Image (cartoon, rainbow, N blue to C red; front, top):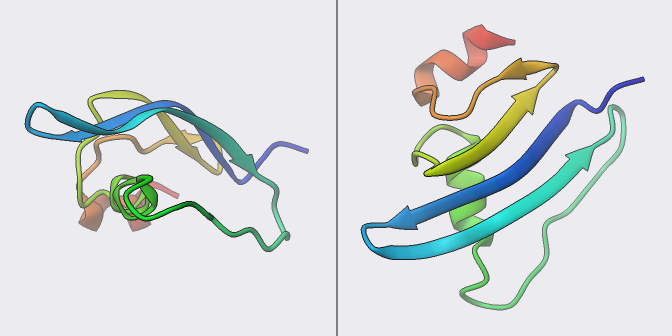
Length: 80
């Protein structure tokens, strides 16, 4: 059984400031998962990239085995 969401080498920034530096994780289908971290750790930036509201500068985001990295947010729903 493959993961529902797989993130590999995700890098996201705001101009020259890199807020997310090489994040890797996978989420199993049917499981509840949370993203924890200190203030400024990149939680919100990661979620914005996953939802298509920010562009990733590198890495892969696969939802239900479909690559969605850098798709506009209005296309992510249609991709799955």
